[in-house]
Image (cartoon, rainbow over all chains, first blue to last red; front, side, top):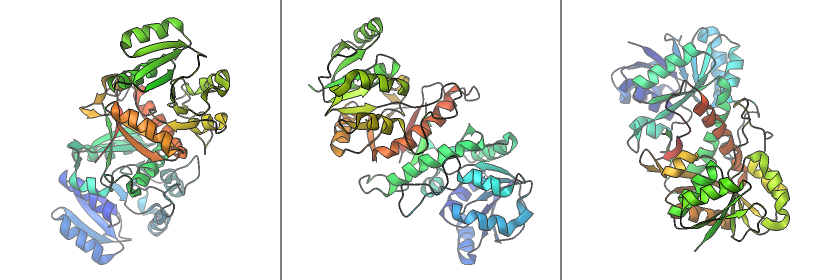
Length: 213
Length: 213
């Protein structure tokens, strides 16, 4: 059975793990918060296991389900532990104090920053930054499967992630090289700003972006 | 009956006019290409009229259904003819030769450039940049009403546009001040790149972006 490692034990880890388990992947939650990690594994049920932050990565795909600001610390802690892996960056580098700007520089993105920090030793794939935890747990939105926009410079790495996404009942959309993470992250700033805007009473972190045809 | 002026007689003019007429607005097509303008009016049917480029704007809302690169020329031609109007910028400033960059500067947008050129003499509203002509003509996508993302600095101007959008059977989503046109335009670069990518055989300029909940 394909195993996927998820670093982080928060809402996004829960959402992604729920879907991956529904697709009959084995999921390992690697958490810094011991009790939160154990609670999550217990509620996820069969197929979920846990490990402490710093435990060696045993799968080929590791999902960084941590805030963008915590990525550097995780990469430093793991050193060469991600070498040769597919590293999935799901983050949205939003300035949460203002909700109207990104913390990344123009012409870059969180995913590209992660790739730069990894210095080519791992393949970075952007995915899951447009899916909120609530919709991931449910698995559909308004009766539609979730869209997962995927960007990356390695076709093989994107295929691995796309296959896992499809098997988990979602629709992978390969949008091209990793540079497209810029547009994915920028648009989610707009979408997140709508969630916190009280004028939009129907948008409560339970929306999903769909490309319908 | 509310009248709306549309400058341009191409595919976007056709799509937007089709929806506005379905909402029982009167629509005037102001075109530079005489025969194209007449053909469009004829196919739109009752409620549609035409005028030559440069004819005075008689409505309160004028939609610039021209490519971003043609906006400056239209504004110069109209001089103070847009003063006090709501000017709707629908453009996507995409570099169509590469399909991987915008022609605007980081930290700006086509809509903001239009507002700058108008020097505060008109209220600029961003709308319809995420809706492709084919879906506008049909009016729905996958059985769902189209979402129209709307940005602008004037609440009154946005309310006028939102009311017309809602009356025309679409869902207006007010995303905030005009600066959010940056994210709307950036994301459409990504979406347009998907339409021309032969790997995505199901995306053929007939998709629509929906925010489902």
